[in-house]
Length: 126
Image (cartoon, rainbow, N blue to C red):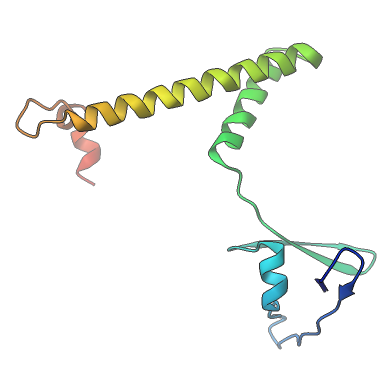
């Protein structure tokens, strides 16, 4: 179905191949924001298809922070307040890490004694 406005639904028909494959009409594909993967479910004999949205790095960190705080026994408003504080701290830490990396890259001297090879040489050979 293609939604042309909030009250009108336009249905599109497609063939199912012998391999059970269906081509999604371009407008539907674009409207749904489909990228590489979709997931399926069935409800009341209707197949529901929706795009897979990979969590951003921030969301992945958020899940880890939240799980850690729950493991610490935090609940309710205390959990929410601590979670928000940890997210601010993480944002600050990442921003500082990026600044430090950019500064180090600007001042990198190929002829100077570089500890990178000493520290990570075995990993860099791959």
